[in-house]
Picture 1 (spheres, rainbow, N blue to C red):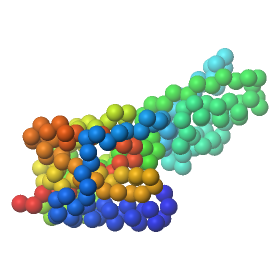
Picture 2: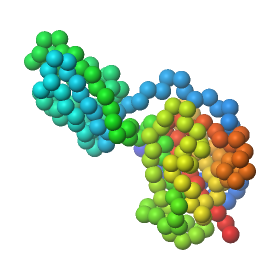
Picture 3: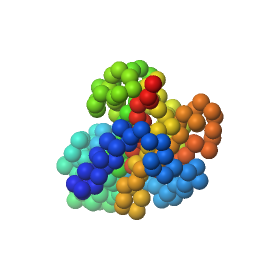
Picture 4: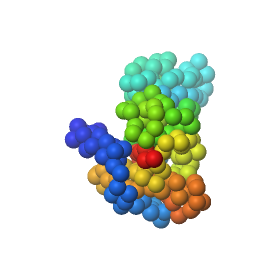
Length: 221
């Protein structure tokens, strides 16, 4: 991510965490369309299972290192991060073709962390308790803000995200925001988590996108 975009992202996150003005960003509507061409890309922390047809001695599993690369028999320092399983299989075939005639490779992924731009990242008042381990001290309760990244799934909604992360008792769900990349520009959108959970307002159960950042600020007592 370019430096200027990172700075803008940090500013948007800081603004969303400390803002006390409801509706300061436009609402994220329930009829927002998800991208139709989403394809999972391998990321650091994933595990790839490599099958080489007719060569079981070369079939193996390997973790994707933090630098995004893997090392498997006859294939050293091969970049896996950012590629689809199909693309990685073709790259492995190119390397193996030096040693094997017409290799056929299938790559399957487990672990499912993915690249950061396809994850949904959440920061703020999340989890069941009042404390945490990252971020700055909030003003609506004891403890610290927490952060978590979860892999995006096709069709994922705001409710799906909340089920995975949990909501802290000090959270103000109706002042939450989603920071989304819209045509290369980071924009904040307001979401209504409290309305969704407390009032069963299904219109607040908006669709999420790969790369969304969900900000959940403190409640004021």
